[in-house]
Image (tube, rainbow, N blue to C red; front, side, top):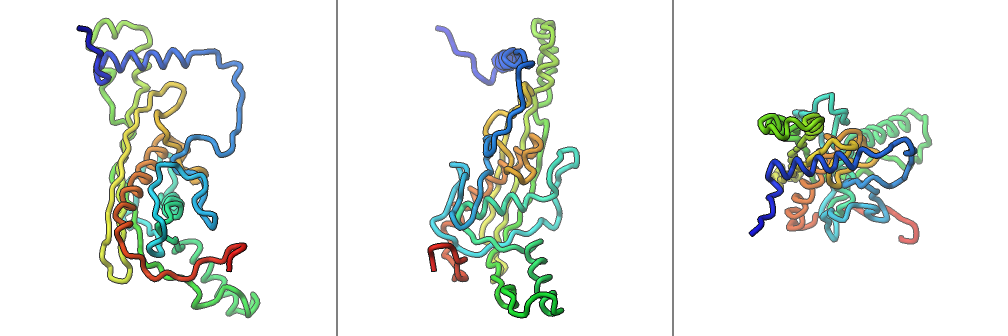
Length: 277
């Protein structure tokens, strides 16, 4: 009886790589640059706001109603992301979008937005802006929870050794260009963590990890899988950024499964929107 080769068998994997390599050898002289707004297959994409989550990935885990106001804080120990990854300095803006799209939290700003509020109050006290300004003391919303992200590890080449397999098999070693093609194959992995704290009690209410493993075939410059990187947030500039963005997406989904069990806190008034009081 014939047996179907296991997809984990080295020869089967190499055959797949060669096949993909051949399909990428067509004539590229007729290709033209094309801009497609809203395209790119991003896991973290779209928007969040008064209309709810717009364009969010279907894999996002959501809540029926928010459970608390949430501030996202930078990890005090930083992030182990080296400069050659060409990544933003912080994943917090990315997580703000994910958290708001999930509908589990009302996100409050404790970074640039807060500094602007303080500045506006100082300008009013200095008599520079109108005295009846809508920005006033006592109107800010408290952060009932704080979420802290952590990048546990990110490996841009966890699949070393494929070339060694080829070198040990004479029939494959002698195929022109095969070793060079396989040198382009890289396995990218990332693991992250999210920690959720109740600011009233300082208790850590929930913790979750997220992880991603992707095989980058190096053919045509694509990463297998739907791993776009946080449209406009800087996480699509490199394959490593896409993998890390997807890992945080996974971690947030895992966190939401815990958050759903929490009793909602007393929330501040909702933002006024058109057509509603």
